[in-house]
Image 1 (cartoon, rainbow over the protein chains, first blue to last red):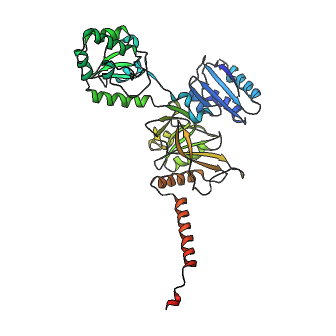
Image 2: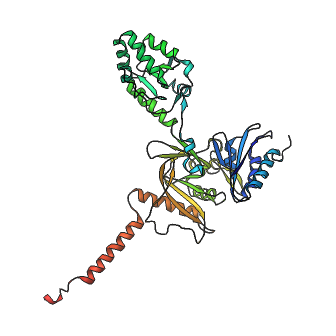
Image 3: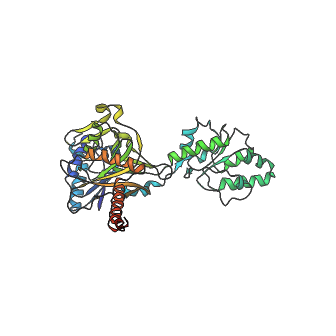
Length: 89
Length: 333
């Protein structure tokens, strides 16, 4: 299990479209992905789960990855969040 | 993983402030003293009457618990020597109790107000009589202090049986639920299910507030079940009675073929009947869920088809055996 804490940087936060971009990566991954904000921990492969976190700009989210190639997957996921889900504000 | 037991979240406390805000109108609470202690925590739902503590026996005085002072406590304080009364009230205040509530709108001794203020112990008064007050406070606290956990799954009400569908992402939980809704059953929640333990051995589940009545179906995106199927297709909470895990079809996987043995799944320390259903294309999962629900209802009424068939089988064997071994009565003639 590897994990990293990231700060949401895009203006709209982890809204539906951003969650979809994140999930597109995670669903192709064989292992498990979890996202945690505060006391809520959700499956990182579920758009609806991610939406319940209601992660807004400036908030911290913990990404946990477990399974084959976890390091690489985690790096990709962190890049997606750091890259503001491809949004230009 | 963490999601199966949820121990991390099962210890719940609420600040006195929260209790006060939620009940001030219902219980007509007035604050007499101790506003500075509104951040004290309430951890135990059962209240305590500190009668014996005021008489000097403080060993059983519980911290983080609400103390209700009724007629007995208040009039007893009046009978004590003022210095002794002071000492007993101080002991009560120093015991890390959550707050004090005086029932029946009784007149509160000045020293109790002063000492509660000094020790920052919130002191409320309610016009309700002790028994009503205790019942209502306990009911409220049991509700808010119920241990809870959240699971990744899908929760549906099928013929009145609350079924929690578990399984890997993409295995078809949501599609299965959709099939059930189409057949007239009701969705409680999809993806993030909050399970709470209410009372001994009873679990209730509901959907996450933010995404309620919504589902994500691959290829369609996010849909609103309430808008698509109407208000009768959803419900807010439901008692959890059956856990069904969908697993990929695999020759080697060990699944139940008879149903004589009953398996359980542990959530918040409570064992819930559990079924493992293998998924394969062309297998109508919604139909299997309906049958699982019907079968569960039968079991709840005390009828287990597998056990019944087994019993018949054995009695038939015994009958055959008797037929074979019965003494030959023909020669008596």
